[in-house]
Every structure is written in structure tokens, then in C-alpha cells.
Length: 147
Image 1 (cartoon, rainbow, N blue to C red):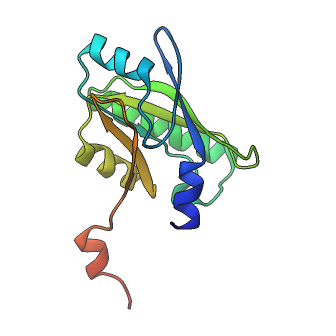
Image 2: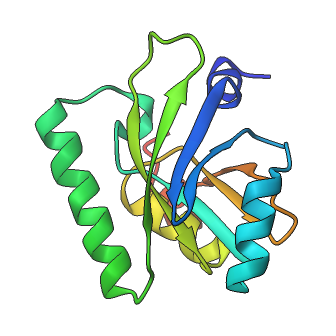
């Protein structure tokens, strides 16, 4: 397991849903999320951030601007995102604002995350199990590498 993968797994993915805060962990079902998904008829979800592209820290103002643009892009795409935050277990890493996005396909979530320079998203289905999904390079990016 890479250091980055380990860091993403050592994070609590906090989501502010109507009715309460839900704390999610990678590969662990969450009863409150399952109940919310069932109640709303939601079959899939993603957690996406625009913070710290490529896992490299950037200025707070730039993170806020990028996150606001992500939220606008989601709303323009007819999604209804809920606020969230990624909270590292060690308390040393940055807390990142996120969007919990119901009813978005994995493909669309990954494409949007790639647009914001992200390494990965959290994605799940009606089973309520959040999974870490890595953003793959597109064929175009691979073809245009200088090496």
C-alpha cells in the first residue's frame, strides 16, 4: 500500500446530511448512510474535493476558490451536493472541504475530480460502503507525456 493510499484510508470522511452528520471510513458500511440512501432512493454517491490538487498543499484562498467552482460545476450539472470534510486521523494533515454528491455515476465523478487535479474520490452504492477510487490517466495524457 502506498503512503498516499494509507493516508486516504487514515481519514474520516464527514458528511453533513439532512438529519445529522455521518462519519464514513473507506471499506466500512455505515448504517446511518445506508438508511439515508434507502430513504432518498439514492443508488450511488461520491465524495469529491477540489482542495490540494495532486495531494500538494495550496493556499487557503485558492482552495476555497477551487471548492466554490466545484460546487458551481455540480449545481450546473443538476446535482445536489451536500457539504462534507475530510479529517485526517493524525490531526496533522489539512481538513479539506468536500462535496457529497448523491446519484452521480462513478465515471462522471472521476471525470470531475480529474478536472480539479485530484488523485482519487470516495465512491459507493446503495450498500453504503465507501470505496477509494483512483483517478486514472486518460489515454490522451499518456500519449502526450514527454518520456
